[in-house]
Length: 71
Figure (spheres, rainbow, N blue to C red):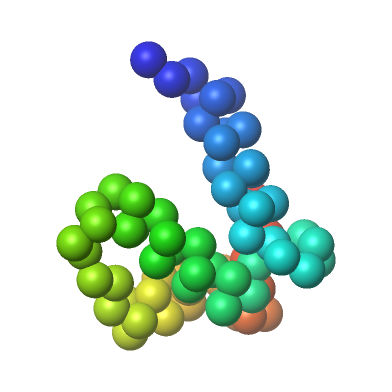
């Protein structure tokens, strides 16, 4: 069983691997690429709807600055 600390470390590593410019944020394009690749790894036949990705980004962007932090 994976511990909470291990999951947090994995999430941080995933975030860092998609923060291509090293800004400390995921911009919409980086977020979408990450989600498309993660969904593809989970289910290779699943097609990600970009409209849903836009909505997911908006939900995660709690301060509406068009970028996501690790937090």
